[in-house]
Image: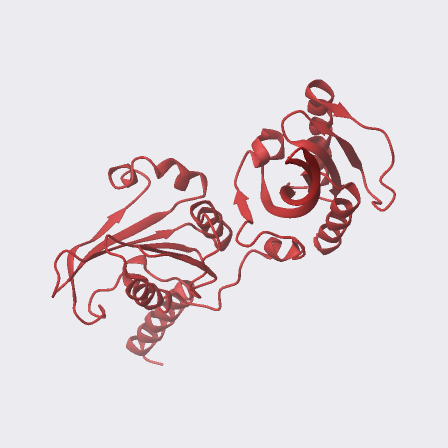
Length: 315
């Protein structure tokens, strides 16, 4: 084999090797619409790129929240309707590093159940479209009220994000019965306001509780829907989870009450008590997880939901 041919084969092999390393990586700038802008619109600003050092210049008041969720980089673009220059669309695409972190920041911005059928999960109202897909969290905003246009833009961006994306597995652990739609959130630290719980998920549940109200000098019994929380805290290993359970017990002992009485259905370390601010508490450990119910009225139903959550949680 000639030396020229050998050099060519080596160089070609290096190109293939470098290509393999880049498989699955999508440059964030390729996700911002430019030549494929929806008909009738023009790019008026950007794309502008931001890093951890420069994000404050773009979203000063919210940058810290993004940093907590693992922000990597982002790109921004502004567009204008060619027929009505007052109609503008702004697009922000954030690389959060993972689907877990992208879901987390999405879950903090979504404030009710208004799915748009975009990406892994989405929120769509008159002036904004939010969604996450893969490692990206996307915000599309308009000053004018036009949800159909916002969805068109969001769908166009979502189609550029490579798949198949999958949501964090922990979302599927939460029982559906009684779960308030769009209420599951992920926190990277300080779950339920407790630093010892660190990171994890929480979901809001509804239970029907009897209440008494005075109507025309008479006491009437009514059924009222009240909220309580199921949570799933994540730790590196079972030892760390055991330490967190101990810290939870110590805090309840100081500020609230630790109750006696076994939790028969739970074959695990468990804690039962009352928090002066959050109400009744049940916490149990399963391997590297702490799972719990907080703020409930009906103990039996909350224990059943907690047992279902524990049964679904995979080590």
